Length: 472
Image (cartoon, rainbow, N blue to C red; front, side, top):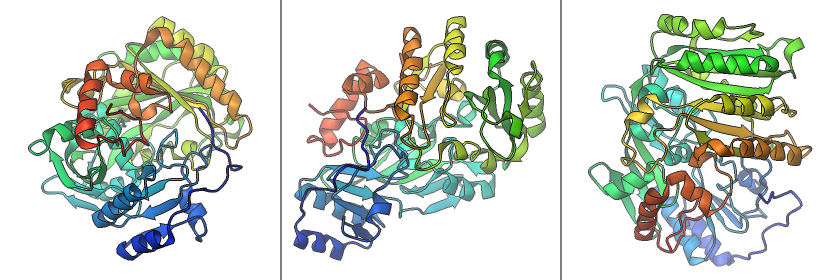
């Protein structure tokens, strides 16, 4: 991956002053060029290793702004990137010397507790959505880091803490409003533009700019039994084998992640544990708190845990548990793969490479799949891998540029060691890895269906700053 640095020059593309002035006049939002105060703030994204300089940043307040910005970008023949929360690992929510359409100002949330639905604008972050829906004991199944943008998460599929009970984020999606490449405004739902609705549920930002979603809500919380238990890394092999046995046949209410990392310097972590390599089982029980405590007890009591942070807590608090581990500005690199099962050979790889973690912000998360995710037909949505057993997210991260190359290589080596067991990959966990990897994320047949859809909605590939499905 080519990593942009702060030494890169400012944009060289010169936009016509009259054209920019015309755009400013028609917008209710904000426009920032390289000479404007605030440009440097608004061009930055979550991943600190990405330091790109758009020719123009347009912060939209509504659909008309989005359409005007898109028209401007096409007229000026600019590369176009679209940003919601800006949480793209490879920095695809920005661009060099192009137009950045920023949706963050579009942050409205409209909850209808009686109908159990919610309307959500495209700039909303998960924490903002949770805050609104949890007032009614309801939720959209979505993610594990509260400052993630809802739009990017949803368009890739959306895995999260209640997926085994209620499915992926796209499985709760009822409709989406979309501005397509030619500037048309369309609605996609099960009964309208059904081909586009299928593609939006996993196909990423390839087909247009989603400006608004409507989701069905599910009952969660507001209190859940959740948290994590930690063991020394030298107990990893026995912990993983116990974990494998424990989750066999577990109820759908239980969702777990296995985490390897150095114990973080957080208030709940004893000082003597900070910086030591650990393996953790994190979990959320989307059901009765007392029942959750009973289900979790056998894992929590196994071996000699050095820390147990499980307990009854607000769901919104649990949704923020990993926020300090993925803060803005750190340098992030990820490799990912799906595996069918947690076999002894896979466990051996996990044990071996987990011992090699040396950065305080590097980690792996092994996502338990199955449950409601697997009960949706593979062809019902563009998301691929419904029958996946586990999804690996291997993060080689650093706080600054120092040591980033070494951590990136650690993540690559870990991923390569798992190569004999790869069955696919979750598209939201891809870096810029090329067309073959995008195809692998969808499978050949589904990729070709998506390509046909791309030809219909974006034949000139206007929306290519994404895990791109080329129309040709």
